[in-house]
Length: 69
Image (tube, rainbow, N blue to C red; front, side, top):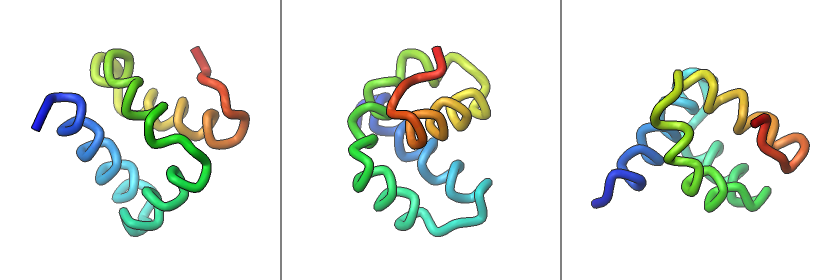
């Protein structure tokens, strides 16, 4: 398993935990909005920042389809 996939799984699980939602529901939402690959590809940015920054970006992606940065 590569670092990107490990981080994606960690991000998904932590995001779901912090939002108090089932992980499967978060993944389903990301899949329905076509965000999984975009979030996965954002590893270089997300893994160097506070995880809350990734949350903010993901929420903006979910609403607008665009990154905050």
